[in-house]
Length: 114
Image 1: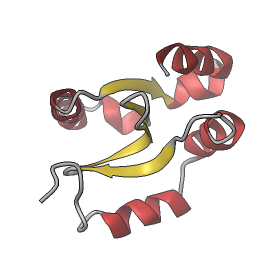
Image 2: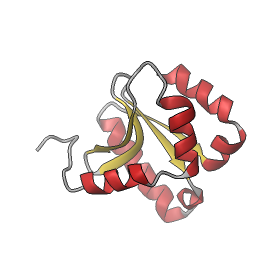
Image 3: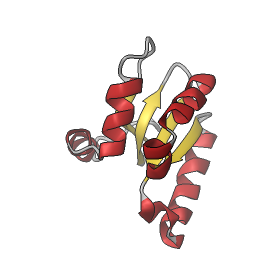
């Protein structure tokens, strides 16, 4: 099996695409979608689903809600980051607060990383 594919997660990823959070929707429609490089939403990579993925830059962009700051979820995120790192993929994480209160700064940071 290809290490970056997981057919079992595909239906869940499709559901997440249809039900994006308002912060994900804002980043997607107001910034990522119009970029001249391809960015995928809710991309299955191995055993995880990345919020956004740019293959050309090997970059995952994650938008974290408040539950990501709980101990159990923080540990899960640490494992995800390590997995992506093993595949040579960098991870950028932004909180919902960042998207809502520093959208321009988030966009500038992403552009620097692409």
